[in-house]
Image (cartoon, rainbow, N blue to C red; front, side):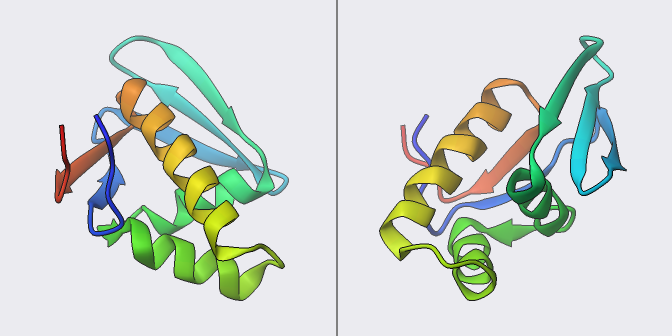
Amino acid sequence: MTLLLESTVVVAKEQTSCDLGGEAAILDMKHGIYYGLDAVGARIWSLIQVETTVAQICDALTAEYEVEPDRCRADVMALLEDLVSHHLIEVLDGQAA
């Protein structure tokens, strides 16, 4: 699956997470697997606690961090696709096959 900037994402219902000193630990309750995120990943995780688009995530990160927009988009897309593959987030619309 390929995410688009217009894709809306949100955390999956069958997970729980906690802050670990600025990083995040996520437990996939369905499969019993832990997943860890660094500080930037944890920031993205906090942004997708409510439905948000990939573009909104990228806008927030480029405003908060010194990162080129193209690099930010590529890194955000890669992380979100990984989270989708681990069933930790849901894509609600705007996805392409």
